[in-house]
Each structure stands twice: as structure tokens, then as C-alpha cells.
Image 1 (cartoon, rainbow, N blue to C red):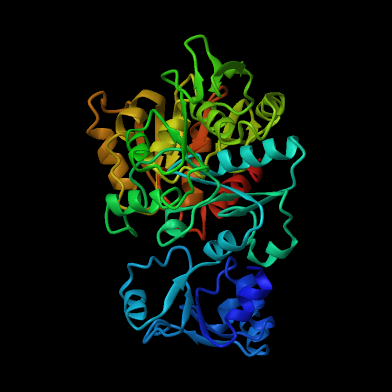
Image 2 (image 1 turned 90 degrees about the vertical axis):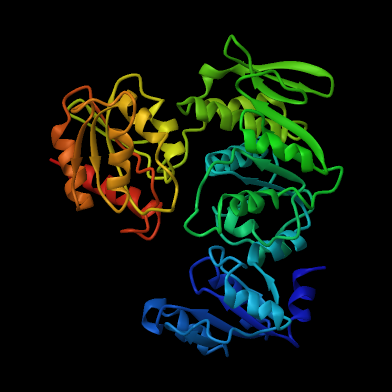
Length: 461
């Protein structure tokens, strides 16, 4: 089915779109231009939609705004926003009344005419997705990047050729109700995350599994052999398995040998691909990301092109990004670290103890593992946000904690926290902003948090 045919199939239906955020706006405009009866439901008022309300109202789109935006939710087809899970009672009631629940990314995957490679996981999704895209581009493929990064691709689907490649980063929210799977499915790792939105950890795991449960036998599933949850996913695989591991030789798959060489065992042959030390972006977690990307594109990209990308790729913004070196102090922006595991991985990249800025919104994830890592890698800890007390408790309850090791400071305001950490730094120190928490207590997203950190540091005299 083409996009034109799909839109034509909606013309005799009532379509509801939940959420008027940036990711859904191209969808709403496309529906309106196709003459589909569309209603947009959003908690915001008209003034908060930056002119989008007026533009779409003039095209015949109806709006239900404000606190009652989900009352008596109706429509034959309902496009949900990613964070609005189908377990919500409003959606469950709509389904019971005969509504079909879908999303922009699910429709895109069902219509996309080219190979689709999709990546999910608790950590490393964006870096791995970007590496895959860069490797395919280095091999001469035209790549369409979307999902959680890039821009919504549904409106572009008629411009995508069969020889192109679509590379998607998919969250547990996007996957939760998805009934289709990509040609190549990748799970970087799974650890507790987003438990403030999912019913429980098992619901989160089950959402991640949707990336491969609908695959064909000739598709590929790339799994992390070193992660217990992803390793167990192999039991439910319907497609060809491919592993990556930094701790054991895997076949078929990509692994790190005891000498620090990345090797691939594919199609009965073993290839020494490159030394892990040649990878430009720092940290063992990024060695894992590179191996994961290689496993995803093996056979699609020559090894030489993979190596070129791994040597040259500088990383993605807000991921262990060096913002500035001032008076001998290095300031690192790791705003993407919205989970304890991600912060632990970042801390392990630094040989000397750092000054750490952490804290943000609580998403129901335990900080027990973070406490010992902070004691090992941090000399001064600056905490702010709603999780500050929980992180402090985890550190003080760690077996190796002693008063003053690390020094702990609790500061309410984010700007004051950053400035205090910077003022405490001496030549040779590293100030790392790696929150181990989401940004939503104070910021729209982790990008805004990272940009705020960068601005504060760049404005220092």
C-alpha cells in the first residue's frame, strides 16, 4: 500500500491524534491536506501551540484542548503520542468501543518500501542508531533517519526508494503497541527504566520485545550477549540471531577478544576488524555500541567502511560531549544520562575522580548501583532536582562510603549547582554533568538541559 492509498482509506473514518507536539504536527498537517476528518487532543491551550492551532483550524482540523482533552475519547482510528501508552484507561475504553490504536511510526513501518533497521534498548540507542546510519552512508546507501531522532518519516515515505535504508531509534513507548517489526532489529541492552510510566519492569521489557516478535524468519535480530534480559530474548526469536559481546566469543556475532581486538564471526569465517583503541568516542560502553552497529550492518557494509566510521565518528551531542576547557578544567555534558546505568558507564570513562553534577526527575528507578560507582569515581558530588535525596542516600549507603568521600552538596537551583561545581574545580579536574535522572522536573527534554549546561559554562569568565 502507498501513502496515498493509506490516506484515501481514512477519508470515511474519524481520526483522532493525541498530542500536538512537534512529532505529531507533520502527521496532522498531512491528514488535513488529504481531507481526513481529524481531531487533535492536547492538554495545552491554543496559545501554547505556537500558531499550529490557527493553521490547522483553518484547514478544518478540530481541537479538544485543556484538562478535559481525553474525556469521552472517540474516533475510528486513534494515533497516540509515544508516551501515551495503550494501557491508559482512556485508550482501553476507546478500543472497547471499536477504535483502532496506531502511531505515526507504526504506519511508517507498514508502508516503508525499503529495508528498515530499528534500534531499541535502555542505553546507547542514539549512538548505535547514528553509527548504523553513518556506516550505511559510508557504503553508499541513502539513509532515512527517524523514530526518536531525526524527524517523523511518514510524510516522506513516498520519496523513499526501495534501495534506500530507513534507520530508526525506537523507545519502549513507541514499541508498546506495535504489531510490525523491522528487517533488522537491535536491542542494545535492557535495564530498569521509565518505571514511572510503565506498569512495572516486565511491562517495560515486554514493550522492548515488540521490536522482534513480529519478524520474518529471514530477518535479523541483534542481541547483547552480556545482558541477562537481552540474552533471554533469544528464546522467543523468530528470525536469525546475531550477537555482540565484550566478554565472550560469539557466533554468529561481533566480540572483543582478550587482546582488545574487535572480531566478527559470520558465515563460518572469523575477521579481525579493528583494535578497540582506535574507536574515537571514549568508554567501553561505546566499544559495545560500535560492535552492536557492526553486527547490525554486517553483510550490508564492507568492514573497511565500518572501521572508517568508528575511527572518525565524534559522538552525538549531549553524550560525554566536551563543552569547554577553561583554566585547566574540562567540562563534560552527558545530559543524555537519564538513568543510573548510563551515568555509571560515563563515570567509568575517566581515570581520575571527577566532580559530578546529578539529579532530576524521579522515574521510579532504583539508585542502589549508582552509590558504589560514585564512591569509586567521584570526589565531589553536586546534587539538584527531585532525585537528589535518593542519590545521596544511595551514596551514603554504599559499602565504600566514608564521610567526605565524596563530598556531597545539595543545591536547589540548577544554574547555582553548575556554578558551584565549576567554582570548586581546580586545574586538571573534570566537571561532569551526568544526571542519572530525566530532565522533566525543570526542562522540556535532555537536549534543553544539556544546552542550558553548555550556556552556563560558556558564559563563565
